Length: 167
Image (cartoon, rainbow, N blue to C red; front, side):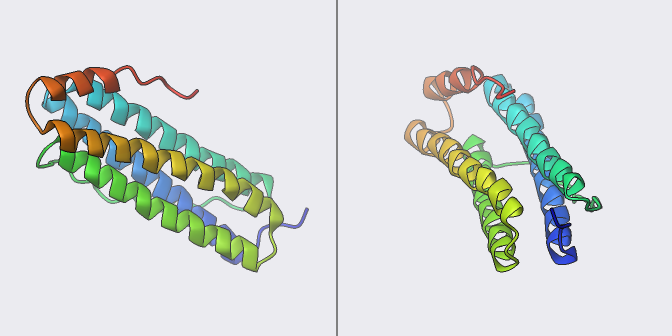
């Protein structure tokens, strides 16, 4: 199997950074929810952060399998305060939409270079992003229905705390 092109290798390395940045963002949201005593939402965000690290490692391993060189980039400090649980989940959804766009651009690059193994690997991410956006979007819509206080918020928090790890 031919090695990755330098252009695709660079783009995949950038995606590793974006995935690790995602984990950082979700850990910041986890900390916010812990401080708000919304342990279920904190649990949901912690699992989300763990998933993002797994996504980064999937690309990390792929680059190595293709005789490429992994180069990790810098990660910016994530926001630490949010206006409300709804605000945090809206930002999570917007973040997932951004990641979807980046994955789609990566797929286009792999397609332009006729790099079929990379296209196949990225198809997994495309499918995963559909699930990621759906999951965050559902929480956003539920929070819009119930508001930011009261029993509904606590019931949703309990429900989100039941999320299982995908390991």
